Image (cartoon, rainbow, N blue to C red; front, side, top):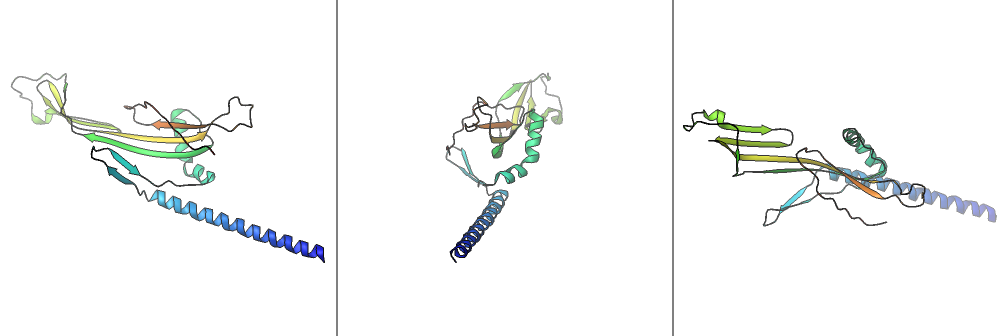
Length: 200
């Protein structure tokens, strides 16, 4: 009789454990779906202070490793081709686009030599340069260009991933976390990067 009770109790415990595990899996998938919806809705809030400096608040989608890898596979592959690098064991991905624009009151010397009478028609006095990331409008005035408007856009991708152990044979050591920042505007450059995170 006792062995039968033991087996019954064993199967009950296994059934309860399996049901709990299945419920946890469903809850994790639902939470992941909610995080994806929250992130894709792009609920970005922007606040400026008295000095005009901006603060932005955005939701963070907490995903499983498989989902994170699947969602960013094409983008990471494009980065690897463009920068001739390999990105493995991705931990986090952040994409950011920043635009700087305004009106300038500075003049720049131009190679265009104008007559003292300023006889050039108005349409020839207007100067404009534009590419994918930089735009500038200016007006020629005697031998100078007066910049009237400018706009600079930066597309930035930051990827945190696990790097290689040093030395490699110490397999018991945790892998270090590295962050690669990709700046697509050829007119800009990265000055400093400092990243701190909680240790697990």
